[in-house]
Length: 379
Ligand SMILES: Cc1cc2nc3c(=O)[nH]c(=O)nc-3n(C[C@H](O)[C@H](O)[C@H](O)COP(=O)(O)O)c2cc1C
Image (cartoon, helix red, strand yellow):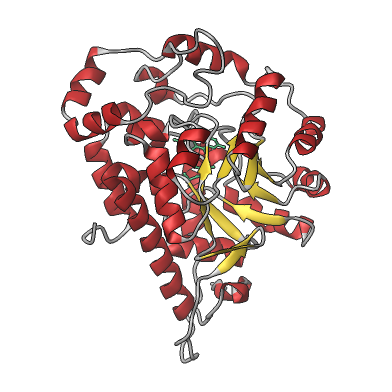
């Protein structure tokens, strides 16, 4: 992993090692992918301010997220089907995050279940919740997350309906999944991936299979999921979830100042400024464009997290400068996972941490708390 010096190296290796359908699933945005592109383009446009001759010998990227100490202001975002990017992917990513001193978020749509991950790691992780029509199931899922001692519940609020990703349909990644000859040929050229996935604990949605009789069948299960996303979800449901979940609640997928103000009043511990990595409303602004007005509107009423386009430590510095307390990253660690399993995720986190540390030094700051708009160049 030493010769992987940046997230782009991991991405290229990931593309070589993982079957095309899963790579496309990860890389795609919805519809014309305008928002996906804007997430990166708008971050790259933000110039950092080079400062010199400040004593920056003693620096630290350590901070807190929701009051818990972390090695850097980063959490691994929930990513559905992670266990299809690499066998037991959720367990490996969680282990790498915990070893690096940052939180890991397990998706509702994971391959390994809450219990699988809890049994394989020795520290608490976060659980991400999609609310489905079957509220009995949601209640049970929240209870399972509590029983597994998850330390935060991340409620995703930007997926009442599912954005269309053209390549998923063309690849047969839609639900129900299609077995196609071209996919099988592609998989045959990725034997290490295939062995890993075959050896993995599960090959289907671990949190859902087993909950219903007859759900062991992937096709039946996928159909059920597609019908289950609840378009009627509302702020009232946030209250209901709060009544079931006594721990810290994070609202993920806020992209509007008005919504942020409402979110701040719910009693949630944090919100994540996010457009789901450009996978939902295409044509929406980039996450980084909406971060400053949202951070200003909510002030210190709620902790502000950020995701969308983070590929480097410089990107974290930019987001923190514009009002985030911490960031989440999705694709960057999936690249690492596909490239090298647990070691690849560890490498992704290490690359980002080193870049953040270096960029702090050359913008003249020594602690995360000091990062503010002064690190942005006024060109
Ligand atoms: C392949 C993929 C699957 C995702 N699955 C979920 C999910 O199950 N739940 C969720 O809340 N967000 C999901 N997201 C969104 C991420 O949590 C995160 O918001 C996004 O990846 C951030 O953008 P980035 O990939 O540019 O870092 C997914 C993103 C990707 C790329």
